[in-house]
Amino acid sequence: MQLAPLPTCSLRTGCAEQHGGGSLPSLSFGYFASGYTRVLLDSTPSSLASAVCVIGVAVMVRAIGGHGRHQRAQSACIKPRTYSRVSLRSSSVAQQQTATASSAFDWERAWYPLSPVSYLDTKKPTPFTILGRRIVVWSSTAPDNHVHWHAALDMCPHRMAPLSLGDVQEDGSLRCAYHGWCFNGEGKCTKIPMARNQEEETKMCSLARSAVATFPVQEKQGLLWVFPFPGKEAADEAAKCEPYTVPECDGTEWVMTVAPVGYEVSVENTFDPSHAPFLHRGIMKFDPKRAIPMEKFLCKDDHISGVDGFVLEHDGYDEGTKGMEATRKFSPPCSNTTVYRYPDGRVQTNQLYFVPCSQHETRYIVNLSLTGEKKGKKKSGRGSSLISDAMHALFLNRIFGYRFQEQDLLAMRGQEQVLTESPGRQWGDQYVLGTPSDKGVEVFRRWLYEHAGGGPAWAFGSSQARPRDDSSMYSRWERHAKHCPKCRRVLKALGNLESGALRLSAASLTLGAAAAILGRPASATLGVCAALASAGVKQWAASERWGFITSVPQKGVADVNMYKN
Image 1 (cartoon, rainbow, N blue to C red):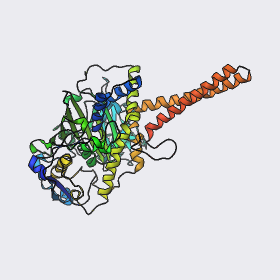
Image 2: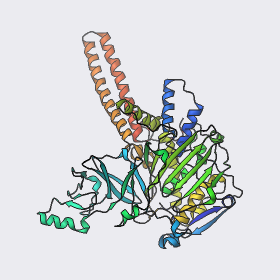
Image 3: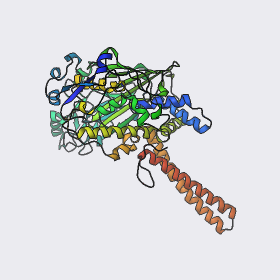
Image 4: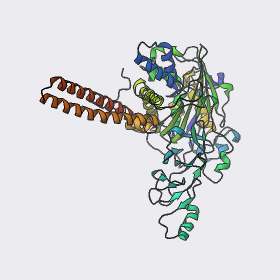
């Protein structure tokens, strides 16, 4: 996504020059953690129901990030240095960036997390988009039952149909749904059903144009990673670096959301904790009246590297985060590792990834592990799985998961609308930065324009694509539920419950009517009560299921209130 189609600028505020840089705030998911933490610290469950909610919150706390503090600026004056977007895109890397060639960041020569492995179906292909390039992922099973993952362009070379519409064969090859062409994990065409004979099939399969481009992949820390470098040297380039992970996330659980907003505003949001008391007012204890000016927000050693990123240090931003010390390490292209150190000695680590899919779509992947958890053998069994699924649904639908994120999405989508509708202005002229709380945005923008060419290198170049509409903002199914195995299981269970309750209600009503005809009033009354109770269960299941699909109310006026009680 290009925030401004014409010239862009890198900001260095007066306070940045005096204090040595800027630091990062935290993203939509990043704020869940502090919200969870406050519930655990400030609430005492008085009933079983409240206890369940608190447990649900605790489980989710570490998935998200916390919040930070910033250093107070000594000068509100912003002194932008202007870079021409044309020069950023058309010249060499060394000319594009003020950094040295060794420090320049190459968007295609990096590992990106595609998805939690738990979200993938080994029996069918899954489509993804990264840097504007459509790819398909599928797996094959070796004789020793080891699963091997493969990634290729989501395009059959025969007639350009998406390979993700196809199916995986017993030998691990991917068959195109259009005409049955098959491809192995190396992208080589292995079968053409419409070939008249073996000679013709062999000849067609051996053509270079009959192969599909593939990309290096690897599984690490429960995530499937891809190296989206096109070309024969992809494997050699991929071997030169490793995916960015942290030891604290070994054995963690991941949650993925596909956000209908761009990479730049997403990362800015995660580096801006000071918005939480205002944008998220009414959720947990977020309240503008509790906000406090951030005193500390620094870029460690004033060091920003194209390859290594930067580290930010900050303090609290409201009454609930007083005394907290936080660091945020940005590791290109998409990692934010946030560590919170609380006055009572607790240390919390949150890992967040923001994967640039297209100009107005970013994949958020966050961890759900709490620091200090024992990383032993996980409990298994149907009962444990049901509890885990129920807690996941409780958090998203009933605590604040979806509504919290939608508040962020509406604000970020609004930013994109204004920035794409102002073609004659530099983004530095639109942003008015100057307080310590702005330092995270400033430092990220310095990295973006001085070291990374001004934004993601989209596969087919940038365009004036319009930001997404409201239906995308409110579609919980498209953002999360359709990708998440837990949500899909809960949805299936709710659907079964709804159907079963409907049948039970009809049967009870029929039996009640029969009892009334036979002159058995007690049985008739019982039948009617059972029918009414079943109808109530059916309605509850339908309402809960609706909550996984959209934020638009199921009944009445289709207005979405982001700040309802």
